[in-house]
Amino acid sequence: MAPDRLQITLSLGDEILSLHGAFHLPYSHIASVSTGPVPEAFFRGLRIGTNLPGVKTAGTFITGDGSIFYDFHDPDRCLTLALNHDTYRQVVVEVDRDQDPGELASAIRLHLASD
Image 1 (spheres, helix red, strand yellow):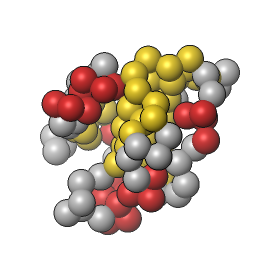
Image 2: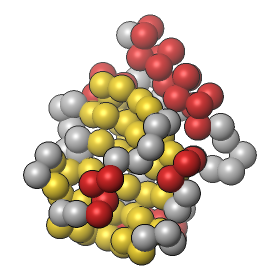
Image 3: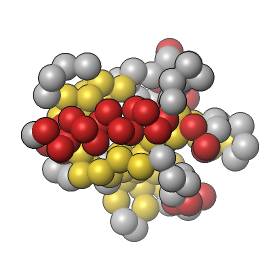
């Protein structure tokens, strides 16, 4: 992690399915982070990417509330980043199997509190 930004790297397969590359989000653009239920907006709105419910959701979904980026298979292993000053209102990504979503969220919150 760069000291001033959070880097989110997607696998090559996820880049293809989502039609998007890695994210480099300045911490100053992150309003909050959550491990709660994935927002249900992925069921509606214009989609640029892949949406196979129960299999894979990856890409940009344009809703009445703004753009949301999703990349997940298991909604219980996701981080939801609420953003300000950015293209996306939210970025929702599944963490790797060897990572704990709660621990990652705590580390991001700690970084946000120190700014």
